[in-house]
Image 1: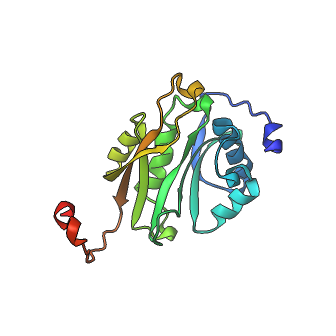
Image 2: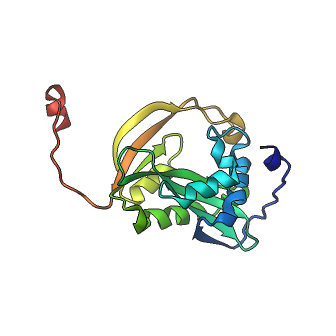
Length: 199
């Protein structure tokens, strides 16, 4: 954090950029992007560590796409990572756009790159995602990519900082959903007491 704190990053808005898979040379830029968006408050330390980011992206447990400017600055990030149980399912998340670049279609282009055709080497059948309920952008994105909502997590996230929203809205609930890429029919056994409701 001390290294990131000492690095100022002046991002010019409305720069040209490309959407690309994470490259090892992007690691410092990704760490700086997390710092620009979250300050020192993100609860997972590895996002601030370029070496850890490079190692995570070298395996099959995480795949990140970035928005990279012609100058090499990382202004956007979207990822899928192994969080839900099962080797053929991953979660979409870590969706960040630098504050100087938020009036663009960058977020949509990054999500589209992953959701329309997730990398074949990951062998995914399903992608899991959560849409926040304090604004509708992620809900619209879930609908665009035909995510099937199946649950709501009440008050799952802490409130956003007041300086970000201009007002405090309390804790944030999440809509859980799935995108099915390859359906694999199988038997499901319903608990007797819930069978009617589940059907």
